[in-house]
Length: 304
Ligand SMILES: [Zn+2]
Ligand SMILES: [Zn+2]
Image 1: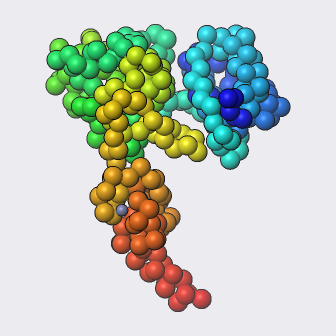
Image 2: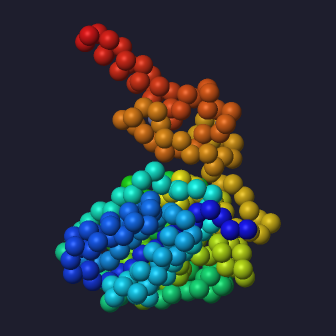
Image 3: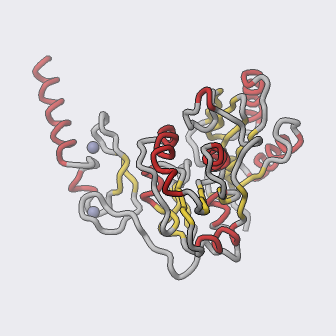
């Protein structure tokens, strides 16, 4: 049976000579097609995820597939029950992937790691002398990741550069494998690893979401779920009997994939909170945040 909506995930590295002009025509197109979602446009390319009806998503893909700037782009398509975004947001950014390289920036079209398809990736995971690096953020990692993968100790993707420079000596002579949600971060990150002097660098082509759809790989060796940037929050990847929940409730440590942002807005920390702990924690990530909220309330009252 056909689903009433689809969600598209895509990116394309290509030189966009005039991102502002492209944005204007793109806003008109997406409005006409009643798409919702987030799209970033930069001189280096485009990165987007949108939802809409299957007819409109198809029309959008046809337009992009025939546009000289985005011809050859790959699409990840999922069936969903409704729109997965509250609105449409299209922005022009300096970097469509925030690696914070500034004047060291480069195009992955010039330098990138070797692509592995899901089956090749799964096979290489079994080999010795490999290092697997997760090129995502900590909150994404916590929901799920590849068995044995390294989580860079950084606050954001932007800090990866320094972390690589501090650790790359340990990876010399090994096969360095890197992956991310849809592939966009790894095209650049794997290129960066090569530019840092590492020779054997590989990337998972199409990212985790493609891996989870491959009928042969079946998402094997993936633990937990995959974080996605739409209202679904997570999608299943591992379709073998080994599927499991790896994330844990912040309060009682039972397995839980239920995301929550701390109610104390200065904290806003993304954490897991199980159903049972919801009424007890009142949505705060820690008791200290609840107390901070009460304290702010008291001091506001005094001012009045
Ligand atoms: Zn709990
Ligand atoms: Zn908090």
